[in-house]
Length: 149
Image (tube, rainbow, N blue to C red; front, side, top):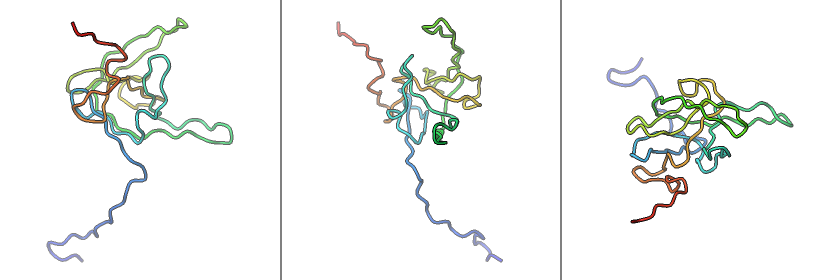
């Protein structure tokens, strides 16, 4: 029986995580994403150069190997649905998500809300997030050059 004023639980030793976690912020400084992988190391979608976060483990490939899902958490609000026409004349629905503070687009999924609700991938738009709070990422202008007048 614990003594009065004493916790019945023993203190747990500090356990280091098995993998690092990286935080990302919107251009306005709002926290948006924490992930176990650097965005620069994620696959890049050829169509729009967005970074691809895997939501589910892949099916077993050759030798029974699976690609594990990424571990991440997104803090964003749901945005509008966009319908994009691909080069092959097919259509793709993009369920956008936005920064909760400034409402800038952060990324999209192919499944209806809420986020991470059964789809295979989450896509992060290029130039949407920065590792340092209050500092714009280098690709924020998507390669556009600004000329001073």
